[in-house]
Image 1 (tube, rainbow, N blue to C red):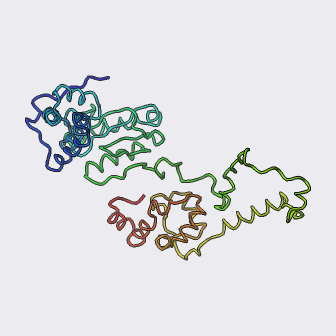
Image 2 (image 1 turned 135 degrees about the horizontal axis):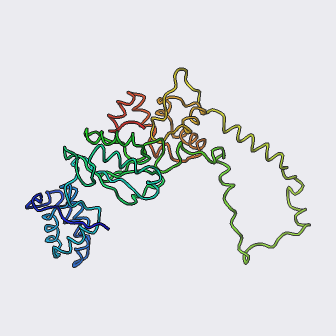
Image 3 (image 1 turned 135 degrees about the vertical axis):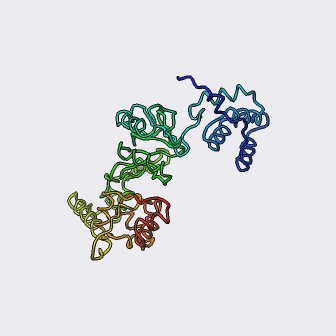
Length: 346
């Protein structure tokens, strides 16, 4: 582990104090712990000090120590042990943490580091000339399936290419809002392109997949005799054959493939701009007769339930608020989407 020391004295501020909001928050945080255990709040207070000033100063360490009645050396030990704390000034607009652990390394984190060296500074923890950007390499940030990825402040940016990463750095430098999460057509950590398995299973067949509960041996009724079976009502009715079952299942599948809506004439909208809709889901929506933003925006609860059944992905429409997104896109395209949601459409 590398040695971590405080920044040189000549760049250390002489004083530190929480602003009014953070001071109130700090007192509430300390009060969460039992009397005599207030030192347990040392990490959240140091993190809040870093969020306020951008890095952890010597004055901040001493101020937190005084609030928690701790020796200065104890708080210094915490600040220098955990690499989440920055001990010298970092970029004012973005300090980029590049994950270099094995999954990200195998997927191209080395190329992301090269971008940092060329666009920010050759050395980690050193800012660019404008002091707005800095970077470092860190260990696993917990989004291995979306490798390679980086973290800026509390947000992650995943599924990166060097080209997209350069754009993200430029966007931070320009003070723009940067889209977080996966930078490709992927819903969080779901498979690329959307749901691709079990797409043709009718909703009413789901119950048949549930295993039957085993009867308790002590309470289960005795098996009927052959004579009793023959005397049961409907005993002479023949069970459906395998061929009949297959025909019924085929009919169900054919019914599930029929369009739910009449597609309007004219050019289709790019439904992939709705967050949560990838190429696969767009194709399925088109097959159902949904080709425009206006149709999505006007879906009723009953229609949403029917579409959910066909997509085999319960709750996605309401969870990602497709209707609100589609309403904005139908009204004014990407510009209206940005005005309503404060970010670019997917």
